[in-house]
Image (cartoon, rainbow, N blue to C red; front, top):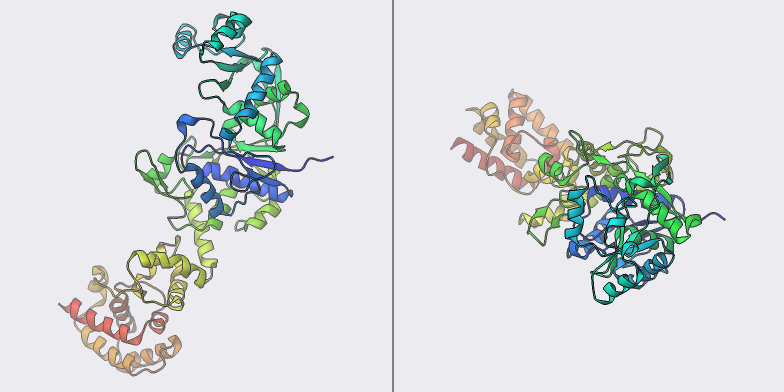
Length: 506
């Protein structure tokens, strides 16, 4: 019987969710949905020293913003909980005991000072079959001394007993069969008595097995740990239910070599976090895609194509289209350059496709933050609709269309020099009279009347229209001039022309 697809995204609440982690969550989600499976959100908080307040809430909010639905998790509940590792201590203790009882693990009392001394004495020291015999552990101390030290309250760790000289085979969905010799692996720590919690290696294996995870989809950086996890599955007798491993290609720097980092974003001016993050430790604020004006569907589309392709020329794809087309056969083995400019292009395309009304709703908080009010939703929708083709981000709508909401306070100097002559004030005064005589200010009607007037007077069309635009907008930019004046109240248009005459002449 074929196993039901069950995947998990298992972040640690140690800070904001990196965009690489977002892509991992996205691939888990679309693979699960493509195969009628379940998406689990598991919080891996076993490292109590690195816990950051607010990080778990941030993770949930980020996934919700992006439309990555969770079927089971801390908030959603489910039949396989608890979904927070710190609440599963009893489960881990039971499995640690099982490994110890079966001789698959041992207790080690080595202090940090003793381990540091061993590293200095032995080049490239690792705790393994060649060194464990000279260390302070249950294999060298014996059962009685080990028990005495535990009863005396000595702190200890439980290490996995790795047999050297074995070929460990990892079957990876993207990379094929990867073979590692067990001799290069060290006896990883699985449990620490100091905080009564397991390490990542044990907790992940136990949770993946008990939660019946069918596919472990994670970043390439976890590939070196896969052989250890294979050995742990065998040690527990779970080899037949081992999940399929899928190690995704790394997200690489836009420029140069290496893994994408926050420093790259700071240097080149793009976010590496989905949402803005306020660090509770140092008070620093890091930018987020949401707050910078990206649309979640654009971020999802952009990330999905970093390391995967649909097998055709498709670029703009909805979440459902991504789900319909997704397969790991089209995932790359090599890392994907993080082309943040392509991300802007995606956002531009999605902004242009969005309805004016929906875009106006996203733009309203920007107006409110600038203290601008009194405009109807219909007015705002028509205004953003005229400039959205020039915007990459929601914030660009203000830069492109601020004149719809406030009169110019200054005028572009280069445009004044080029477009405002000695005769311009007189011609603009005449234009005011023409505009005031128009009853129907629809774009086509007003344009015909004004252009006929310009022709009848023998004025230079470009000079008049550019001066007109300069007076109303503040610069020679913006959409079709008569589309602007159709939306804007006529009294506002003529008032702006009068202000320009007075201001520029002065």
